[in-house]
Length: 100
Image (cartoon, rainbow, N blue to C red; front, top):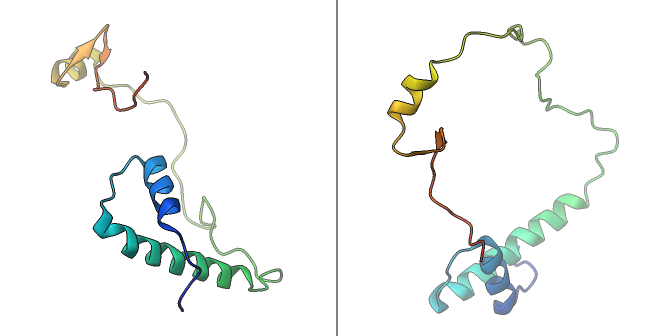
């Protein structure tokens, strides 16, 4: 399966959306790989699955589940004492999205 041609500028756009850096050496390989993936998804889309019963469920039928009952929580002071950093009584985490 050769796949549809994905242009390098499209790979760069996808990489930017994913917030990953792609160097020139990777561009051609990624373009080819993405083209093969798209071709495979197109091939899957051609299948007639209208009469196929769903086989995956969020709660697999027949499996036991526990009752959803409130239980005692951990002591807040104990938990916060083990956190690497706190601020205003909550966990402090480094910013990972550029808000500027």
